Length: 161
Image 1 (cartoon, rainbow, N blue to C red):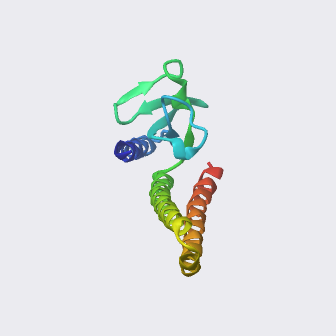
Image 2: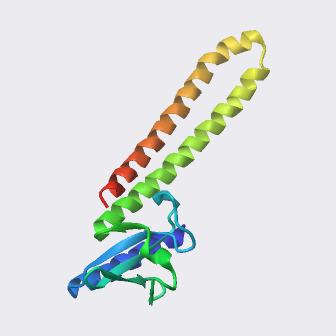
């Protein structure tokens, strides 16, 4: 995943160079080993340059070479971003998503561990433990809501691409 951010930075730089030369370009996010079904499955970024009206050439920014559609059609698929600001927004949201996923996983683990203790406890202990268990369940739900909120922000960003 660390390389993912390097390729985005390099794709942004190539995009900048093309735009300063008056060449239409877009930054693509996706995969080049299989077609992802959602943007969060992406692990790579590259650039598509318009070399003639409606004719695009994929530029592998990290490797410094071009890729024809016949060599790998996946370079011509993916999620287009039309400037580096959009890609930076996506990177920030992707990091927020990772953080939200981690917080959700931690909350679920905490809840499950306490639930196991609760299930093993006697009736009088369960009475005193119930409010804590309910609170942990609410935290799990809030963490899931936080995760879904970031997913919705990512989907909103890519809906206009």
